[in-house]
Length: 113
Length: 114
Image (tube, rainbow over all chains, first blue to last red; front, side, top):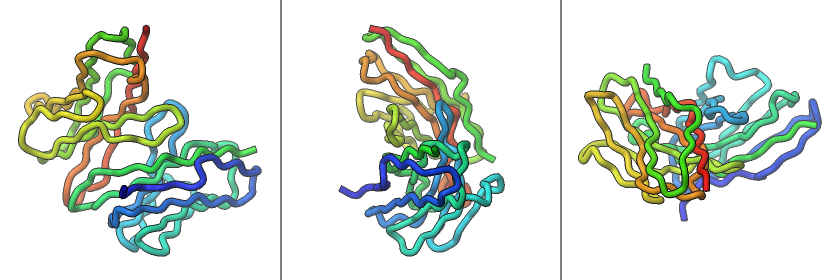
């Protein structure tokens, strides 16, 4: 089945130690999104790629970066995780301007110790 | 700019009772509307969607929603709730073209009592 896959499902990292979360898709969608979701809150968009074009949300901290080496893969890099970065990170894809329906991965739960 | 309002933060129902979760949106043109469900520790799963056509749409798990343009609403309904329906529900609005990024409501937490 075509899908969005996030690895790992659970990630524990040390305060200040760089960490990378990964997302892959078999849907061949143009757009890949990264959301941060804290407990009992709506997902908050960090940034997205439309094809190779990177779009950063204005309030996304510089500590968060992303890479999309090809259509199928997208990475979220947190350069120096703080305790406040502990959250669920959700990857999603869509066909963008053709169809905005978003398809989500299962998420990565990040714990910072 | 598009926006979504889910006025109820929590809804509590008894198992077997009917359910309606409210969603109001703001968008100038014809929107694409979605309901997603999120179980604890999971990603968002699409329940149903409306793009055009019949304003009453059927989704998975026995859910349905009705698009009412005059009220700018897209309420989610289920005639008989099961304990496994306890989850967080998100309404979202998007559009083809320039406003393709979905905007999510804050979510409604559904609690089901036995």
